[in-house]
Length: 311
Length: 104
Figure (cartoon, chains in turn brown, orange):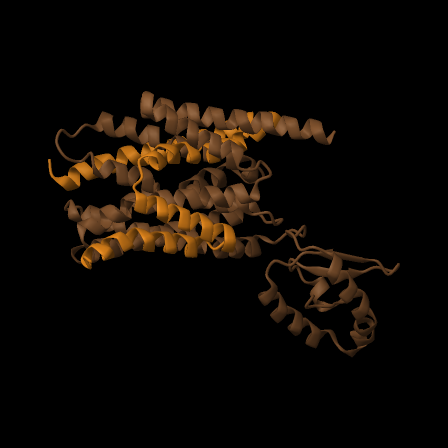
């Protein structure tokens, strides 16, 4: 293990995610440290600031610390992060998702430009709608015959995921005012939901979620504007070839959530395979609904079995 | 009607529906999600929805797209690096185009 520290040191007093706590009986309690590099810098700074009086404590602790490091497994922190730290963590955790969204934004901006839509309108649609699946789908409905009702029904069918994510994330936002919750819904998207759901540290969920969502939104908008500006250099074939990257993105999001869930893989495999099978014989919305319900049923009964076994 | 006008109308419809869906979900989750059993279901639903959306796409994918998907999944499972996995998957998708440029 990299670090040692006694109680009352600068590090232990700080609100960081990690802490060694040498108790009076010589037993060692340890909370985990997922951000070792940043922590190392903080730890070194704290050591320097903590003064000579603590040096003997550290030197006598070293052996215990070293032994403890061999038996304690790292895991998510149980120490609550402040609002600012949670927001920073949300920003950091959402960065890969935001960059991916930015790249999809380039494709969206280019697709809009190829239809003659101004980059400004495309960017505004990103801010107001902020749902790539709907935005891409509607581009194909702007030709003749133009039908608002078709667009509305299609949007509703695609947006059902947003409804489910809103319901899922509501519990994390319960301690905030209604105004804050309603405003935060503008940044609810697959990436922000997945990052918030997958996060296991004791973060301020609201700050984490909002900063993750805003960061994804910023790069999504920037990507769209860039795509509109460089549309002439992007071949239409390239956009078609990269369409499947959306499937890759959603698959990885799903894996991200599954890895953090105790449910295992079977519910999601069941949902995907049932909707695949259903799509051969039924209209797509019906196949989707059956897939979702079957996945939930598998998760539900699978959970019951495990619980009974444990009891 | 110009394309910009059509797009504005479509954008307004999409924005209202997307935000309405989010808020409706928030209300349902807030008022109905206090039961632990219902909460578990609500937490499961979005991931099942993503899986159900993916299912039909997986059934119609080409050989190269399947390869890209496998590469992405494998890289993510091994490294947990989202961006790396997506990038390598995308490279496989693009490889098909590049290979077409060099007929053997």
